Image (cartoon, rainbow over all chains, first blue to last red; front, side, top):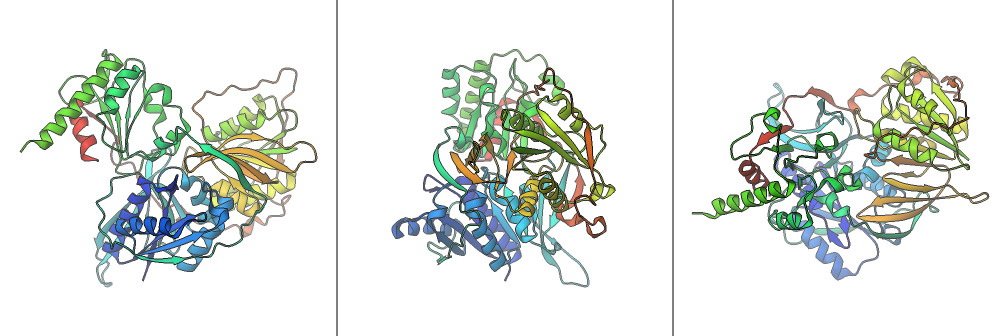
Length: 330
Length: 225
């Protein structure tokens, strides 16, 4: 049976939200097209109880089987020099249709070198879709399509995974994932870690990157230069996985690897962020918000926005409260 | 120490500009060589390199096959050029502004048999006699101090800053040198493009930007939860 590999990223010992989304997407595609979902966990030396806890969480997210490799060389941030050999070994062994990475920057390190090693196509910030197709005289089949924007945003690249005579390595956006639906505990297979190719290349020290949580966000709200109080008030209203990014934070390197499904741009008298959009997958949307309570039909209606950044944040916070109330109403 | 900076043939991407800036800020220890495969010898990429005072050499890899070369082939050619030029460190942009997949640096490192580092934030060249490169990279939510043997390939992310060409007062701009595939001992007739690697190009069908009121945007955000 065909296989799909979902790479699981851990940060400070916990499975990231985009990793949960990758497993859920792999499950969705596998159920539609018929495939086995392998979750790949690469960790440093880990107590059995911790490994069991991670495995249980990943299997409940939708993995059929969990491949786990535990070694000193994997006890650190994901880099090609430390993780690349093992990824290639797993890919050569399983020969998966899809090798999926979560949003958040891991794929920038690991995706392209893996694709080169195994002769795969690579799709960054991609979306997966399944549709039935009649290819008479062949029986009707479920086709798995993977697509991405070109960086220039002038068109999309699309691959029919079944037609390509090579695997596809891809990273996905950070999206919502359903509640746990898989078996409570899937089979865990330990995988030996091969020798690294460049033993002299190594991480000698690392510290938490305070801006990096932004890399994992599922949605972003962009504002101008609000006060700290106004920012805090809106942040309290935002759904989980949503980040408020102000103009001062708009140059953060984390924005370059975030892949939100939703980007809401609040009006601002001093900030026009359209030139520095983060990477977005097909299906993701940028929503520019206009002043007033009516639908804004086009960019011309955004001209002359005069509300202050604080007032716009307050108005959006109020709109979020109204939206929640309307959902809660019987 | 020879620091090779690879730039796109027509005009440099944001990431390549960042790579060039970083390489040119390494100081006197760096002999910065700019290389580009394909395009014209008077392209915007070479003009930028010529405006940058600390660039010592500019090399144009010239062959008509480059127009149809896939990233795997391009990486191989750049790796051979890096060997030919004796590069100790190779800087590239993390991805182009066109396809933007970041495959060329990976293919380059693969063919050069050199370690690859992406999301590079800072680089320190080794002192004399020390063959270890020290750099800072972002990965897995951490800022990591990394050491690497040479040669190494560094993929530099784009930066949201305007170019500040280092005019290099008193220094003359280097002339553009041409290097052919034959000089790199590459047989052009054996380069086979693999167009399936990129997939089919579908023209832009939908607008990525929509215009909504506050209330509509709030509902969109909550629905996406």
